[in-house]
Length: 132
Image (cartoon, rainbow, N blue to C red; front, side, top):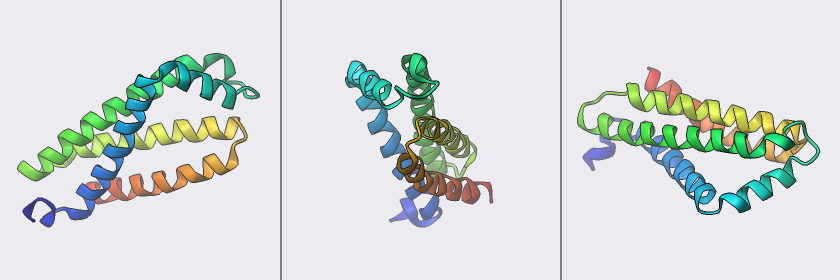
């Protein structure tokens, strides 16, 4: 399978994160009201409680842009061997995870914050590999 032969780890990390962010974005878009209600309840005791719709919209935009960049990046890695766009998508992905971590910590959802560590480590591995 030539597709994975030159950069298998990088491409698999990108595909994993693309799936993660695309599904997350689709869920937010398809049930915006439910997402806002759920997140507002989650942040009811945090300083973010009044800004949930705005912050969720920012996160959604970042997820969409990161996904598009990573999709383009996979294509460019496969066709041209170029990694820059994929790297930009991964870096934006890392920023979104940091934003989510801040939110989870402010909501005092420590297990939720801890679970983001897995995604962050995977993202950093991708950044490291694409930066090499």
